Length: 186
Image (cartoon, rainbow, N blue to C red; front, side, top):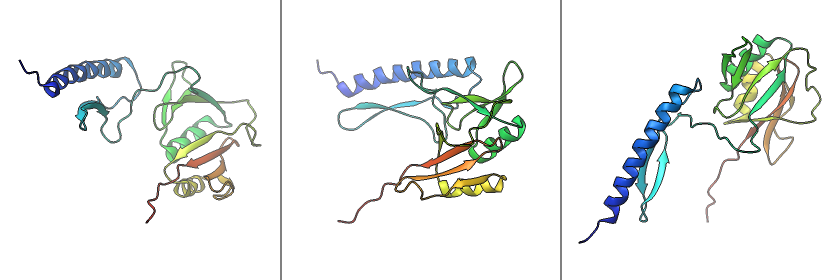
């Protein structure tokens, strides 16, 4: 009897895909976070390796691992103004915690935090936090449009693509852009 290995793999991965779909559906129900998509499991390549794909713009569940940075507290003088700034400039999700305080989830649902009153701002760079953006140049314009100042222009850390700004609470925060891969003509 001849067994079609690819069909056997396909059946096994179809079962796994259904199980993953149920798992992600349950996660969506259990969490207030934005789990927008159930992954599609498909076979690819000559060795029939399984790959999971998520629709564009979908958020994967946050990574839970020992040593991961997961929560930050940002000093603020006006929590609502800071929340509005980070939502407008970076697309962070703003929510109310159970105690009524405003909190945030970053743009990819990996880091959460809140703004705290009565704590001095991180106005002088010591421990620096950088926010990854698609374009530092475009984000600098958004920062300026939202009435905050650039304290280190693009190019100061060359060849890295960075800048630093002072947020509404007076904290100095960095911007970081991944370098674009360029194909060399050869």
